[in-house]
Amino acid sequence: MSQPHTPTARTRVIREPHRGVYDRATVYDILDAGFLCHVGFVADGQPFVIPTSYGRQDANLYVHGSAASRMLRRMKEAVPVCVTVTLLDGLVLARSVFNHSMNYRSVVILGTASLVEEPAEKLEALRTLSEHILPGRWDDARQPNQRELKQTSVLCLPIEEFSAKVRTGPPIDDEEDYSFPTWAGVVPLEMVAGTPIDDPRLDAKIDVPAYLRPYSRRR
Image 1 (cartoon, rainbow, N blue to C red):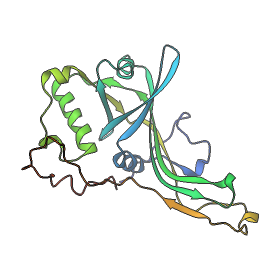
Image 2: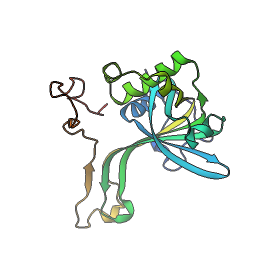
Image 3: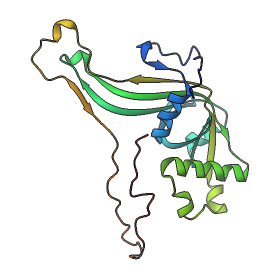
């Protein structure tokens, strides 16, 4: 069920405000369809935006990486971050170049991430990350050992201050351009998984697992 959310001054959509969406159901649908985000933060006065994978569990977003990475070291210091996720659904070709656009679904989350330190919670967060990207893989692969867990940092960002922005539909031209003699419409785009390719060192007796054959990010 949709949960109404009141945007803050920082998350309210200003440009094309009619495309702003503020309910959790839409935000969660977008987050669950993707698995790559961009994390923005400032270190020593320099802005950085780093791409990384993520996983969602209820109202929490998890990111992970090397404990030595600059991004995770900064995020552990309770610095403000901005996480964005964008799904591109189509190229919108209008009759005029000025009115070309894209169909997309995007989410912006603002907040402060916290380090997940309790061992069982950290392992569960890593499972969440794995299952978010590829359901079924966690139980089918070797679990992290203590050395690997020590080398990995996991951070949790509460999904509290957020907004989504969505564009759908055909191009919107100026009225006088509708008679211009050129093709106009939408070129749909989607992420499509190809046929799995065996590791050259894979045991010939091991088949592609059932959970992988129908893999898709369509949500």
